[in-house]
Picture 1 (cartoon, helix red, strand yellow):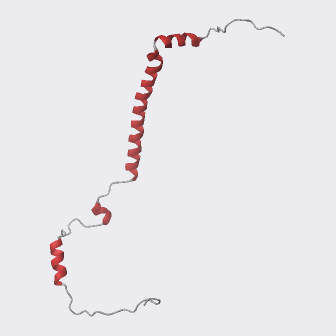
Picture 2 (picture 1 turned 45 degrees about the vertical axis):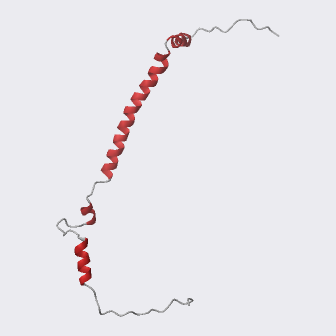
Picture 3 (picture 1 turned 120 degrees about the horizontal axis):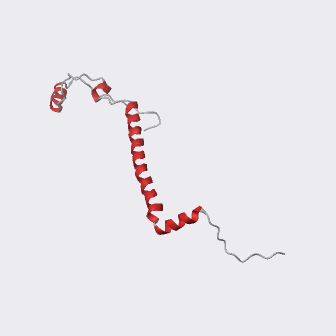
Length: 107
């Protein structure tokens, strides 16, 4: 069986220089991209939200209450006192109390 050489792994690559720079200036490699993503994401979400509400408004047109109910705008205003007086004047004295039969099975 062969013997292994006693050498540490010192493979030189492009990542080693980036890692050294990141140790010296971590904000440039970690903080700046993070802040850039947050700012760009904020503007992107604002545009998506604006588009969502514009699409919803296009689907649901605003209709006034009178138009939805088909009520004429020249109608008379409702007054509770007038309605009360009108209903008081309509009292019918020619009515008779009639007892109805109970449903079957009840005493």
